Amino acid sequence: MSNTSASFNTNLIGVPGISDGLYSVQRIEVVRDVQFPYQVDPPVLQGTTFNLPQVWGNGNATTEAQTGLSYITETNPITCNPGTYLYGIPYTEVVPGSVTSTGCRLRTYVYNVSTIWRATQGVCVVSSNLGTFPITAANVQFAYTILGKPLLT
Image (cartoon, rainbow, N blue to C red; front, top):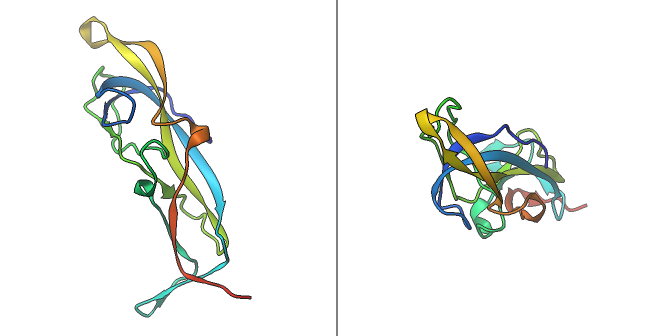
């Protein structure tokens, strides 16, 4: 785990293990350093030589219960229902600037979710904590793809 955001309200849609609806959440960044199974020589594609291997996260390569989720839009903390959405779409990204010939850093997000009790005049009160979704940070599994050729020594 790296960073945890302040609480904000958002609509959860299609998140495994929780009903669709408005919740108060804290976004928890989960990062892992991975070592490639072999040293990778940068690829040459259509005449372009890259300085490093090309790497991308495969959110859909693992099941929804194994990887984290992305958060696509910003929220407006003033209103009880900000009109923003967090979709239950598996997500993994490579942290910019982290790729070397031997590894990289991967990132995803899990969310600490609480129910909201709606008081009058648009004021929301956090009610009870439901836990971390779609999985705890300790149980996140990452998948990634490397484009390059094994460097034989």
